[in-house]
Image (cartoon, rainbow, N blue to C red; front, side):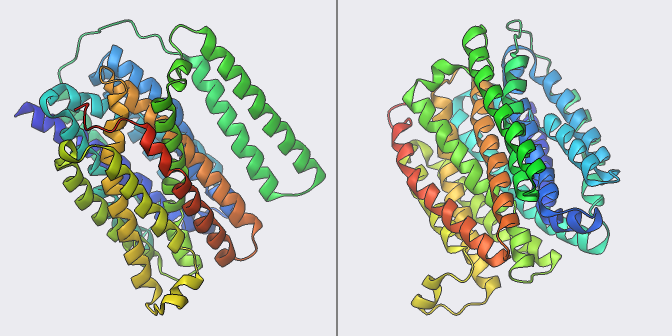
Length: 455
């Protein structure tokens, strides 16, 4: 019975994490208005969270496997809850961005550590348990946008962060009581320098793109060049660091493995296309289609329902189907739905479709959710097959690439939207380009473990 209560408690932490991410997407237009900023700086509330998760997730996975899942989980939950309070009290956009960073550092351990906990307590059905575990995220995708849209439209965006405080305190007490403190299996050696070099490279790259989009003055462009050059230098130092240390932040030997390289390149593109795009759906619906804040949250519900249902079915039949074809079919559906989201697409008039924007958006988001529900359980377990003895570590690395992709996707999408004068034209470019890119990435799935002969 204890293991099921641990599963539920860890799942509730992931639910809080998921709710917070989707709520911020709904509140994004309100940040621009209430904090008197522009789309470039408001987007940092999303991208800085991705960067923080990029730093924290592989470290948390390493510490969880070698140190103590309970201690890592409780420390992270405390940071996430404190970061939520700081977000709620933020007086300006810069303070909010800083608070979101600490919130992301705290939430970074939830997925790898919780995956390790589930793997420890359900060894006989690991693939199915982790598959069902991933379906928790889309539940937050239903609750977050609807609850967030209602809170933001009725009260203030600050309450979407206040709501995490009682939940965080209750979950801390539950995990403290339920989870036994595991013995240290090895002395953790964490490549802090590598983590900060890589994160600094990503941060400077995004800052450079931000400045290019914000101003075209000679001074601004010169400073942007310095930042972009610094990103390249830090990237080179990062790879040098990883070759020298005994326990690198990113094991470069793994990148020489074709399946691992393919898996994480696919994860990077998924982060850019899926997480990057869906962070902007509420802004897209309000600025292009004129939806209300409440409706912009509610329209995300079909996507989450599709993900939950497809994820449950796929997880149940994963042993029979294997990993490869659920990934190919699922990501193909996501790519098609993303492409068709482009506003004023000629295909709709050619086919004679005359549905209103609400119906079309709901249908396409439902399809994208079904695709993600098929693909994600298979992709998650295919990555774990590459290193089954280090579940938390491999989950941390997988999600590190996915969150870097998400951060870069948010940055590039923001850059395009800021430069293109019309939101309609900007979102058309975004959806078409990323949908085509995701189609081009489908062959990578054939380089990953198939699952048919390895489960």
